[in-house]
Length: 176
Image 1: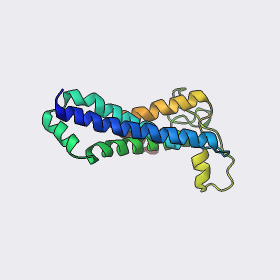
Image 2: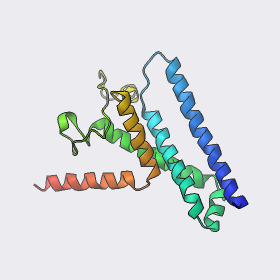
Image 3: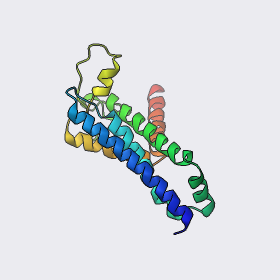
């Protein structure tokens, strides 16, 4: 392995350690807090970690010029992580809203593959604290959420193609 690829792996290693450190700090904060903490932050981190793994898997097939470009700029590593986090956040909101499964199977799909969430006691529907405190209903649902969010960061086209299929279904049903 040449020096450029080793430098790239070193940078990826540093960013992976940073992601895991943030996850550890959030977990510790959750353990020490008396109030409930939601899982949105963990979903965003899972998306970033998925993007990180995707970059690592592509390194052997990259050309030397691509490796040099990745090594030359931190932004070339940060932008995919941010994109993975954003895609995981969008997916989190889709799950939280029940768009895919819906209440009582009234969503677009009927499947037990998607996580379900607790129903918070809403005093003010626009209270951001309520949104940040929403959690998956069970540990299985937490696992499903993390797996889906990781996948959304790993596959750059996953969430955009999901949104496109939602758009097509929505426009198809409005024409009926």
